[in-house]
Image (cartoon, rainbow, N blue to C red; front, side, top):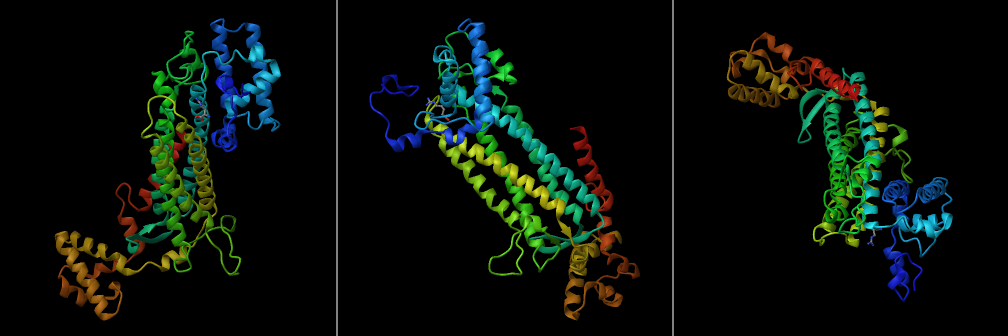
Length: 461
Ligand code: ARG
């Protein structure tokens, strides 16, 4: 018979490529700690049932601690063709260390189906906490940066056309607002991952009356997974993490896109630090914002993994199917990509050079056309009419080849008798941003209030 863990009924060995095709250890070995943690808890529950003695439990726990140490220290020796996945590798090693007569009892009533589902949740729980932490750090950098550059006024765009003057800080906080949304959604995902699959067997349940409440609480889960068939089949938490990553990466990608454009020589609004740029092997003058381009590129990869894995599960029959092993790699990859992308974004923003003069010199009076319309509104003219009148001012300026600030009062009065000398104060970018003082607007007070609310949120954490 086969030497494999499940080899009892097999007479022939596996095809060589099939061995490789089947094994998950090359990637699921990162779950080793979670797998050992699950085994520790499971062994304790077996002892409660007298399926193993106190003495056997002690030996198992000691053996598991040694296996964990080998992984920690990087000297766990993988047995090719035998160690199929992290569960079989750990069990094989445990048997070598404490003898198979005791180690062989650990898997009583247990299936790898419940193990992998448990391991992945435990592992993901830790990574989600790290993601939340780096997101808070990033929000802190956004708030600090916004405060530092509060007086910088720049052109605001819609359709990538110059629209109205805004504060640079206001632009930055618009991106922070999306990141805050991602953080709140992450908290939702963190709550829903807390269901313990352990103790459900391969599909039908545990026949020894294992205490699932104990298993759940010992592993720090808030509840047991309520159905054994669902518990082994459930990768909704993976889908949620992948979809969460997709949206979060879409946000980082949009921020990156803005910064890539703003860092071109044509804009020159910002300069990405050398630490986050690379050069060209051919063109000596080049400094490219590769950090931001990689984030934009990786967003696509994460989205592909999210839709790919959803396709993987959509037609699966009930309970465990090996297709589910395909949940591991996208999970590992998306979490890593998300974490690195957040860290890189943080670094880019922290070290970004902001060119206030370039932003200021990109402001043009036509961006105050709305302010001209608003001026007439204050004189009692209905906005729908003032919009037209301000449009006429723009047309007149184009005709004369001057800026709208240079159209004479006489010409303005031809357009509307409501124009007066006080129109001069409308053509002031600083005053324009300060007029947007309602909540969420671009005035200094509004932007400072946004900063304070981020700071208050972070202080509560
Ligand atoms: N490596 C497997 C996975 O990641 C573990 C579960 C294997 N279960 C089985 N019945 N073959 O899904």
